[in-house]
Length: 479
Image (tube, rainbow, N blue to C red):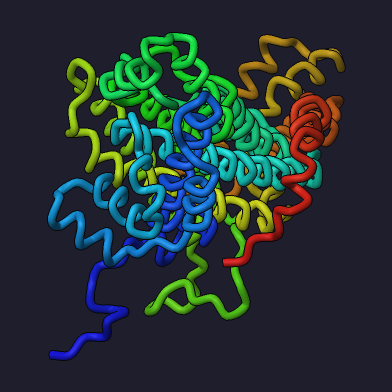
């Protein structure tokens, strides 16, 4: 059997189907190993600055070969050496023969692997942050548009006090605002490992500088600054603390939790025909049931979110099982988990932005569902209005109870419409009460519209101001 070379092996759906090209490139082999080379250059430059025998010609040679990586040669070296870092040291050395003697001088493998991971984690967090801001922005715009459209509130998935469509959207947005705060915190706390040495003691660098502790500290700070970090982790073993990975994936899991909650709400509202995600003119909902308008984007958000949430337990377990100064059982695991966590969240936020940009509200269905339940909710208002018109509160309460039970029986036992209002209108005890005024939906939504306005002004607008540049370049997402 002949297979196409493009289709004869498993392809990760996250890179092939769901995540953006930008996030996929970030975790690519090219980006990773080019960053390794940039780190070797940063180390050599810093060593030269501090007086070690490294020439400008050697540095120029290294700088000229950052991206032209011979991956086939690296693979050959790795099959022989069984060590990926040394394979790339030799490959880089082949491209830079005069600089070969000083590549990786004094460093351990984690100098390139861990510092690269930290650089990529920072870039990935920034990408996630910007996508998160875009979704918050879109949800806020939707909330403002529908700030005062009354809708039936649902607690326990049962009818509850009315809210508004816009206010409900602020709940989704605020969850993401809290997630944004966590992402910002993780970015602020992220540091470089820099030149901590084989077991974190910097012994090799202390020897390199003839026991001069100040020079070793200067080297650590210089390298950190050259790779874009102001600070380094105070102490490490061979690796940066794997607690950092767990904290970052907890933050990503938080985004997935928020997205799953919102997407589930959308799926339930689609079932009620009150609100739908975008549905394109030629889109097929089902291969068998041609009438179907399945909420496939929201379902995909939920599917990917469950996966992203599950990954947080993986990094927690890795952090918990690192022995002494380090063990290598984290390595293969992290190669899979870190990229896939970010690819998943990237895909989720792309979908979420697309949904938020194109959500469709059906006001008349929303109003009908509210009207079906409002008479029951309005009974206290009706009772108070009838008492104010001169009725006996206890007698009126009993009449409302009896009428309510009868109306509920019509709905539940006979599938009829809620006729409580008609029953009360026909009862002479309520003749003087203004039943229509008591059933005005806007009298039940409290400060929901004003809460939308305040949320957008006080919470969302500062985010928009802070990330104006990111929003300006965040194009509309098409799937």
